[in-house]
Image (cartoon, rainbow, N blue to C red):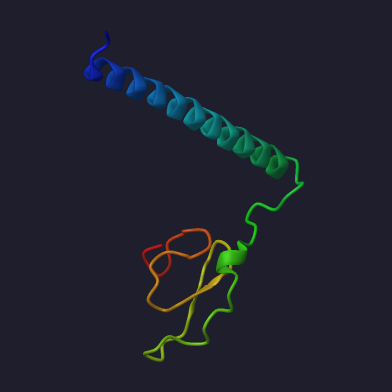
Amino acid sequence: MLDPGTVYLVATGALLLVALGVGIRALVAIFREGRERSRKRREGEIEQYTEDPVYDREPADSDADGAAPLTCPQCGTENAAGFVYCRECAAPLGPNG
């Protein structure tokens, strides 16, 4: 007869294998999508930097303390005065950038 410890180990091992299989499928799909996007960017089918609808908001005219917004030197996006890096392309802002 099987003891409960052995049944537990077999069930846990089977569930881990199922989770690993699902995880690998998801990672392969992400990898393929990334390669496809890179190919489309190289061939000019999509823009280098596309707008993300989640962050598609109007830039503020000024920050709460009255400072003017900063314009990114790389992509031209307006950022709040307190930002150190661009909210769109992550390029450094300001004199050290």
